[in-house]
Image (cartoon, rainbow, N blue to C red):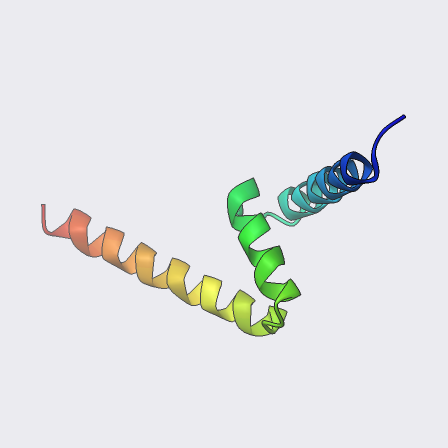
Length: 73
């Protein structure tokens, strides 16, 4: 018989697997580690919409830097 801690870990793992699949279906571009960080931030009270906005802005900034780097070569 599985211990309560083991059963809880299995439930957490299953939940994260489902969230990752939904994330992939929605083409979020988040990997398991990034998704896990986002979930933990939301559990700590971070506004999910604000978090989404920050992620989008960071991606835009990263894309801009990549373009600048390529044009300077």
